Length: 221
Image (cartoon, rainbow, N blue to C red; front, side):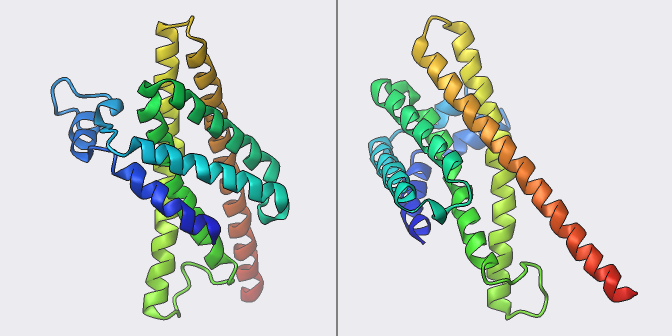
């Protein structure tokens, strides 16, 4: 429950730094002349607060995993991820123009929140799409499940590869910039991890469906 609580202020503060009208019309619809880049939507109004909150979160979560590594399935992978995130935060600290990129990356914590909420529900052994549930509880777990998959696809599978393209393009224009090279390396790692986790998620769902399908066949015989 620690992450369910501590991620909320980070998500809210990060969300308050974006101009969603610019994102929708400039970055998605491309209807605003001259505004087509995601960084143009970053207002930076609360960027210092986001930076401090994110740094505290990664430090505390890393410390907790070192103390109790069994609290997650893959502590080694998560520790590497958190260390890379803190390198990112250092780059933001020394170069303020990277703040928008940090904000875009931190938006993935929305999916992390739904991931953890989904695991809390799953530990109760209740399938999200079970029909004979109280209406309020049924809507709650279905909402969490839908938001989990929607944000996973949007943020991990679409946004992060897009950001990788952005940082690669910046590095190609300035190949002597070592900080951009570090940034490119870190984001390549993030994107790889997201693709790996997406593959693991797909395999897990396929195995589950095969298992459920096998049970259904057994019951029908």
